[in-house]
Image 1 (cartoon, helix red, strand yellow):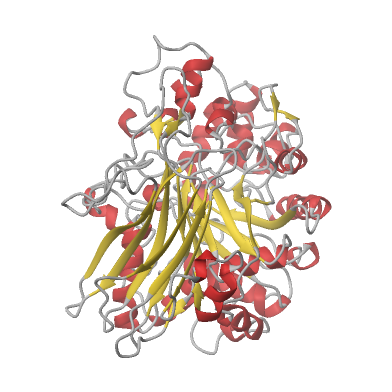
Image 2 (cartoon, one colour; image 1 turned 90 degrees about the horizontal axis):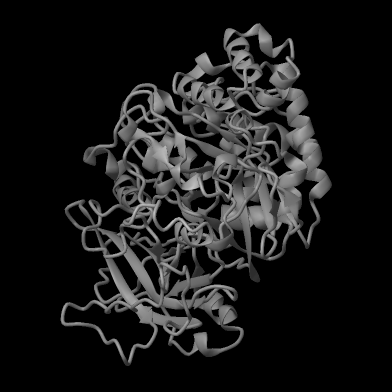
Length: 625
């Protein structure tokens, strides 16, 4: 269901399709350590429309046109009949509908005979005709955990929907104003363990139409997805990358360093393929934030943000503490240092972004203007009660509305708002993810910074000339050299002030063990809240009135900068550094709903009504050899 005639499959060892027609261009892009972007563009790389089978069955009526129109700032009528608009348009969008049974609900609505050939197709059709769309949705989600048991569609039907998808993307693409990158989602979830990837093309319709999306029905194994991607690049000269998401719902498999098919430890070929085709990871979205977990980072006071950890996807298996090290990005970045030492290649060398994973065609992230993850979660007095995914085993494994966050966004430092410029920036990892806010953050690392550079209006030129941006590599330090980092963060013009800038460091010691430490490097009102005896910066406080769902920017700073040198640097140790920027506390969508719908007596007293929005940059790696 993936390769059209003329596109052959391939092996993934040395001298394989990695040495494709695209390889020279790929290396040129990846070696451009300071091909720095001019400005930050905000977008969503993970939006579903009614063409996604789960969305369509669950009541999403809006399609591709409405998705693009909403994202570029137009007012549309929502799935529940409300007038919906963003406060500010996005700069770019990837519609990432599920490849598996693409366009299913639309075909069943017409009782398409191709879809009714499958027993599941007939079962879903009967549920829809009986007005039981939500039941059909739950059934499909359960079947997806069993691979091909969920197959309803066929190549002929998928081909017609895919070319329609690329046609609409082409129509809305407006270089310089609003970019549409062609993509889809590969939805592997063996046993309910979420291994999903969003596949994003650098190319236009003409090249993307040469394939059919590779789906879970072709293979549940991510190595087969990479093989498909390599074949696409070799045969078309195009470029493609994949973005994993929701490791927190993967039953400890997203960053497990073992081959899926054999359960054997991964090798260097696997590491090369993963590093090549998965340069970034979606670290935050509606179904949870996957930076780290309190049990993994007990010394990190901000580790408990938007944690969804009760179950895998589908509510099939509870999450256990043993799974956590293989579900979160910080732990994976640490393990990547160990694997690079063993294999010579780091499979977990990735940048960080955020995106929505909205299934309603409405990519929104503002807490006071959140249009939900699905039609049942569009603004209403009832949405806080919704069960998004119902477990067939135990209600404690359900995914509920109260667990969801209005997250997230991808920030991309690109040379322009075009498909190629945005894709190239993603590929070189010059990206950051936010929990929905549009704060901007930039970081450079080098050995020769004085701190004066960041005071200039065009500070990035000097920073780039002396070092590398996020996503880059610092080579071995000369004797006496210590890396330092220049960081600038600016508040969302329509949002909250900034609390602090932090540098998160991970490193590999001489015994092969990894460690982590979080450093506060710049914070607001530093003269009024100096470090304590424990070295930590006190809380910024809070101006939130939870009952009224209000806050003020009476605390915090509009901009923060830092010139920070690593006080514990050991030139013999592999390390990575990424930046986390914290805003001051603000109300969540639950607080706004409680106020707007007067639900003070109904909503639970201990729901998360306040949070600290944040951003995560891609790391900079230090390599001693």
